[in-house]
Length: 193
Image (cartoon, rainbow, N blue to C red; front, side, top):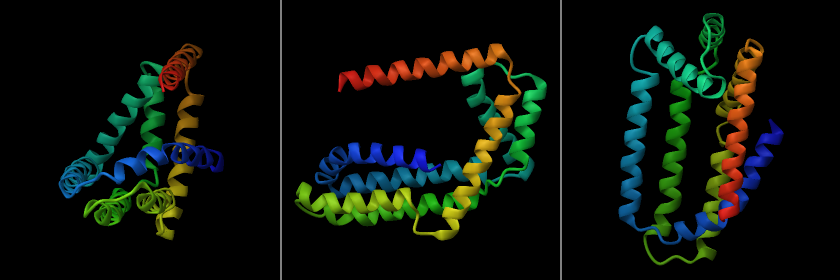
């Protein structure tokens, strides 16, 4: 997990100059648009992961997980679907905890960016604000959420491993092909930079 976090930090560090330049040009109308977008996303999240019976919510999560897995491996067979559904049923996922953290980050973003949008801002003024926000977004100040995220990360890795271990050689070859295509796309995008 630490390796993934360190790679995320590299991505953040590389994107910081762009984020700072954008943050320095924000105006209040853009923050209002962000607030509206956050409200829409939160409503969609509630609809998908909170509202409804536990069985209905599990079914939505299952369908989404199957869709993602099939993008990687191709069609899954019944035993593989059973592995995935069983793992999801035992998952540590708590939609209310996740939504609470999403909303904390959203409030933090709006509160952090509001002073920058209130008047002319230089990149030097925006940089520490953006850096501090990104640090809090990556490392929640909420210790309970950090513990939950650690459980979810382990749980997700175990689910992926269980599914992967159930795949056929043909499905694994499809996964290699799919991931190789992603790598090629990223290289093309990097070369255009």
